[in-house]
Picture 1: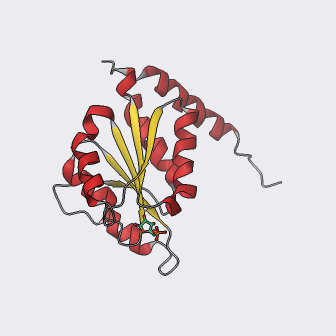
Picture 2: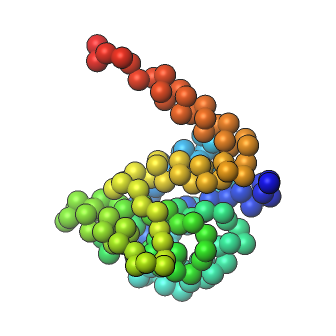
Amino acid sequence: MNINKKKNKVAVVMGSKSDYPIMKDCENILKTFKINFETRIISAHRTPERLYSFAKSANKHFKVVVAGAGGAAHLPGMIASLTNLPVIGVPIETKSLKGLDSLLSVVQMPKGVVTATVAINNATNAGLLAGEILALFDKKVEIKINKFRHSQTKSVKKRPK
Ligand code: RP5
């Protein structure tokens, strides 16, 4: 089965511009795999209507959503509540609680509505997981991910010096 390449897109969304230095890591890994993506700022609390209209129409444009947010990080979960697309949450580190607040807000979803959750600030893994989902239907992406994993393995030395 092959999917329409134009729709082979990841939405990279974040609660604030201040999340972008972390979420750029997601863009970078998607670029490595030549996966199309679009990046948007959508705040669950400050722009709730933007969130609603994005999530309600997301399946027309995207296959996977990566959503980064910090603090009371409701963005990934709220998007997941409005779409059946896979949503990968990136808990963003915070000054006050070091991102534990974000992690718990993203990971503690109620049964029946799900977000995948990566480690605090690990937007790279969110992009990698998005790529692995797309690779199920896209041989080119699968090959690129296999190459990436292979060269990562080769780069690990046997001894520390
Ligand atoms: C969240 O609040 C954002 O995802 C961000 O991590 C955090 C702080 O946002 P700013 O006050 O820096 O805009 O909604």
